[in-house]
Amino acid sequence: MTDKKVRVRFAPSPTGPLHIGGVRTALYNYLFAKKNHGELVFRIEDTDSSRFVPGAEAYIIESFKWLGIRFDEGVGFGGNYGPYRQSERKEIYKKYVRQLLDAGKAYIAFDLPEELDAKRQEMDNFQYDASTRMSMRNSLTLPQEEVERLIAEGHQYVVRFKIEPGIQVHVKDIIRGDVEVNSSILDDKVLYKSADELPTYHLANIVDDHLMEITHVIRGEEWLPSAPLHVLLYKAFGWEDTMPQFAHLSLLLKPVGNGKLSKRDGDKLGFPVFPLEWHDPQTGKVSAGYREQGYLPEAVINFLALLGWNPGDNREMMTLDELVEAFDLEKCSKSGARFDYQKGIWFNQQYLLKQDAIEWTPELDAILRANGIGSTPEREAQVVDMMKTKVIEYEDQDGNRKKRNVSFVRDLWPLTRFFFVAPEYDKEDKFVRKNWKESTSQDMQELIQTLLPLEDFSVESQKAAVDAWVETSGKRPWNAWRVALVGTGQGPDMYELSAFLGKEETLARMRKAIEVLG
Image (tube, rainbow, N blue to C red; front, side, top):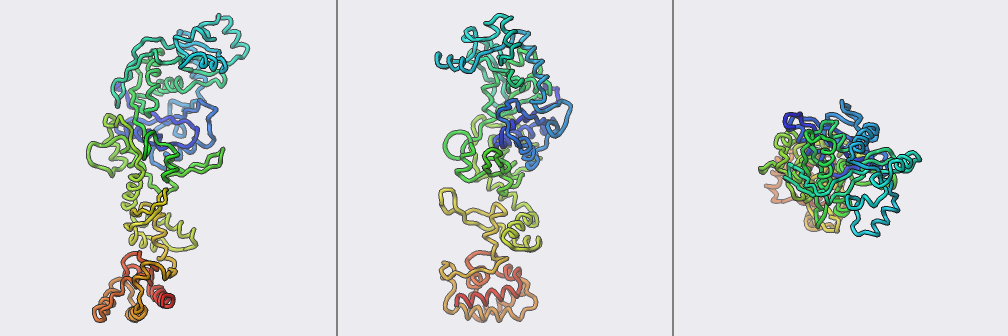
């Protein structure tokens, strides 16, 4: 297969929102395809009709559109190998089910759910395999005419893969090497169900990968136990020469404790596990999304790419093109990758700082308008430039007060409210009590008189006038002036702030502070 064009696929099931682990799997498929000048196929695996969730398919497509992961063909993209929804390929699968039955590689089973339950009660660790199949109700034990009569009368049945015991099955995995399994531990998996005339994942996956000429299957570690079965299916069809190469990615692990990452971890620690906000159509419950929480898509991509893979050097900040250039499946880790959501926040901060201030303003403007404040992008960009490197205080899920750098546009609102709304003065504020003394009102009056004559209220003009007054008076007005303009001990350089506010607003706030604080 080395001379064939690389073709990989991402094939989610529309059973709910796309988990961030699925996003990473799709990303690695994308990086591998682009690195090898290949193609990425988007397929929908919807053979389990009982688990279908309305809106899930559109949600998945919108997620990748936001993230910037582009597919070359598939559902919503077109292509020459369609249809790309498995539910639309029923007749194709039936042909291959019949091929296996005719070759004696599969058989029809009529066992009822209660009969299977009885066997499980009767036998510890029961599985439907070579040791038990001859005691069950199937086409291997029933006369041919009985099988035909049951089918004609509409009895529901499944088609099972007939696995011969005692065979050493080798799965060649790009990440994990040669994985060897004895077929005796495998059960006769269901490949097809007459109830909905659809195949199970195992058959549909193999047939589609073969017909769509998939050369590499890159998927999560949770599918590794299925790989020996899939190898046997390829051999049963006589498709060994076109069998794709496998690569099973490590799990994403909980930030704290043992086990794989779950939505519950995100709910507990306050981070999303879905790319977009998800509105459950059945329960109405809303789950957080990276987009709605203010993450930049390039930050999410960069963060996910380094969970279980690294470029072999110390680089962390990498564009999508740089990730493509550096990507190598053989450098993927075999062990699970701990989901360090704080690192994800750091990535977002780094990408925000790379943006021009004007790019922050649409989101900041929406926040201002939600608080009844109108402004302009130009003034908002000035605020961003003054405050984007500041530190915020926040409360974690356990109620602990912590600090971090501004990492989201939404972080700016509590830091910047005073730019747009005059402060309320709190005499009990620690910074106010420390810096507003009995003589402060007189100092502020003198500062007002220093600023009042200025027609040019620029940073340079103010600085020249105030520095001269400070030198002659010996006064140190900076913290008290901050109290007057901000209301507490935060904010940018005082000259920058007063220049932004303008002469009229600056003097009005100073007079108000004198009036309130005395």
